[in-house]
Amino acid sequence: MRITQYSDYALRTLIYLAVKPNPYELANIQDVADSYGISKNHLTKIVHQLSRIGLIDSTRGKNGGIRLAKAPKDINIGAVLRQTETDFAVVACFVPCDYHATQNQPITVNPERLKTDRIAVTQTLIAKDISELPEPSSCVISPACQLKSVFFEATQAFLQVFDRYTLADVLKNPTEINRLLK
Image 1 (tube, one colour):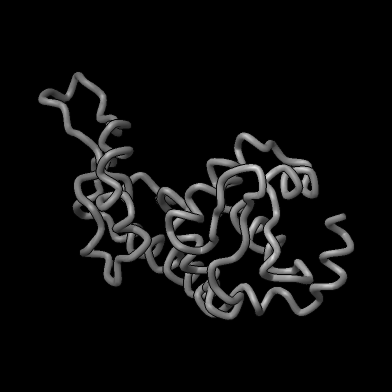
Image 2 (image 1 turned 120 degrees about the horizontal axis):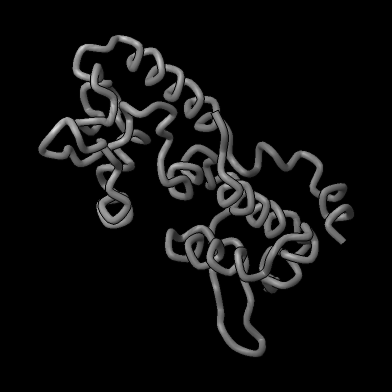
């Protein structure tokens, strides 16, 4: 399993903000981007989402900036990943798709649906049971396949590990991390 660069940068941003000596001091996106050597433009999109979901406060303007909206102990890593990943579709049977009328046409994932119907896509993230996964999929044996339950269980175990940790849990050495970010 793999976490996207988007989620990686989201977690890095949260860590950057959490290790600041003064948690009320505003940081700017350029400083975060420079500290990690990543694109400011890409990071701006991530910061916008982190602000929308209530993990950071964002103030616009000349004296604006960003800071954590919650204490690190209140930011669950699993919850962050569920908010920043578009899906955890490790196999085709986890991806909703549109069927075509004839066998001659390929079965494809409809990208517009994936963009607009986030509920269907995120069912993989929040499903408690394999039967809650979106159907149908692009795999022809999906209705009878038992392997998808193994992949589902592995995905749930993967997420459960992240659910056990908060941002505070990964910040046992804030001074050292802050020094490295300079």
